[in-house]
Image (cartoon, rainbow, N blue to C red; front, side, top):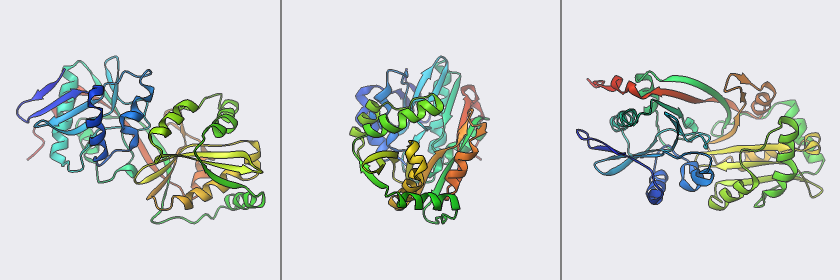
Length: 331
């Protein structure tokens, strides 16, 4: 189903694989997207989600895309991605975004999709100011259903590491002659550190299997990087970094028992903060549990002791019938 809003010349189409190059080209030139929105990333787990991504056109020109999947009568920001929301062109204005969003809600409502669930892209990932959607969510009385906090270092005004525990951990790493190495091979970290640690401590598996992270890294070698810590040529800790234009994000952080005793993670992250100092932000990731309702105090304290400070990651639920609240907002 496509919808034309004739008076404004807007049209919405459901994505199909023949539009891959068009989609990727738009994402590349957008003002609020990362490599996670390229189809090679989105489609690696296509067997788990029913993709229902949308392309929005104005006068037959693509002006926005929405990475999404469908479940029953709800459309979700793609649940296989860490974040999502409406992706806008770098020349998009507020009025155009308003028309895009209104057309989107009408389209979904006429399709019988009653609820749109968005998990917004945190602002540190924006290439240009992109808060139009935040305001429009207010107008349509969207419900804030979840809010996480993620800890970030702002490299234009870095905070000095003053925590005695962190400084002691870094010195311990030096004393134990730990070495940090950027690796192409993910297997040793996944099989010897990450998977055993997650299984033992949390009875969980990584979001990405070894095969999946290797596949993704083959598509995005400049964005997905692995840093391991070695002692006497044996791996003791590591971190998987997702690098975007503005942010270096720690996707996975883990150490084995030796790494924890020898200051492996303190030593590693002191190195990573310097290695990625050219990025505007270093993102340690969230410290939340229970859908944002609980905070892991110890984890948060560790991140803050490196100078990390909190920003929010918001999740919204919108009733598509509320598109009528967008009538006559301009004066």
